[in-house]
Image 1: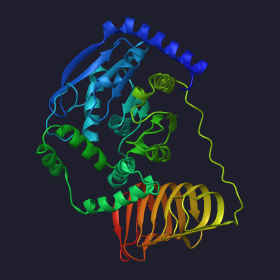
Image 2: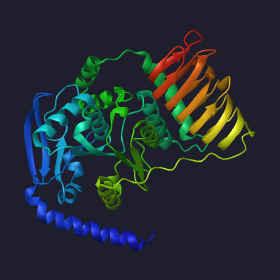
Image 3: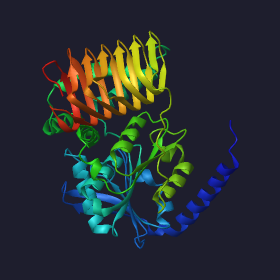
Image 4: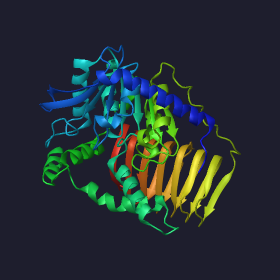
Length: 450
């Protein structure tokens, strides 16, 4: 076992002293209360500490949780802040039932609680679903928020992309086959889940299905409503700085979501916590508390340094029936033939040709000529990518999973030679056929270019 470094021991001592001191001075001030709220017309319950604090922190838990999830942070924060940690309706001690537990409605509950108890513009701290709710609130009420700390945000991606990640990772955890990669199993999961996208599903269906499924209806409704939400128009309206704390090994909320938020939020920073999963305040409490306090301080971290793209712009990159090949830097053209688990990252590529391959493209720019990306019989995932050309993407018999991708096509953004499937998460498109945000699942045909 690795011995703790000197700074780790020092951090433990400081944290324990602060917690002990804060607990002794604020425990008596901690209140558990409930009040009537007008959104769901029930009782919402919350923890409150240090009501005399000049600045208010509002803490929002995730699915299946409660205000008790923050018991390791409330005493620490209450030493300097007025703290409100609520049980979202349907969870904890708050009233439940079969109701529309959408991010919008939860944001309205937050608005009511803030209007009744908070002092001025608030600091928001949210975990998982609660983090998505705080982003929703900050977009709808930007003048009421001074800063956000969001922890391992769930949702955000289109539900098909998000569920593909969850199911693929679950299958990967069950597999002992070395040739079955997580990306491959996510691809299989995507093919299965695509059929569900063809079935119309509205909010009343959501309530009916969840109400008839026994206990835990509130959790199912909240989860389904979160996955059905489209954050594309909301994120640009979040004017407050957003600091993201993320567990490096999160198998519930992919780091891909953090990359998308970094691209789409006006002011965002990412801090990854090593050796932590979806609940870093439980997995790494000392590290988490230290970084939470720093994130709430007045000083913002330095801006992220732009990745420098290097390499010979005339290079030709090729992959022939290989796996786990990586391309980085400048290329005039990259050609993939029968390759699996290819990664293209931090790249500037003139043309990309993908044939019967599986490729993951991140933080790259592609195109500038007539055809930027040509995809045949392949699975392609793009995250934070700009694609530009007369035709940005031409596809045949393929599956595309695009998140925070900017598509610019003077003739077409996406043109299907033969039937293909595409899921877009918080993308932007400009073409003669469409201009603006793009978030949804599309069955692409030769008669339906984008």
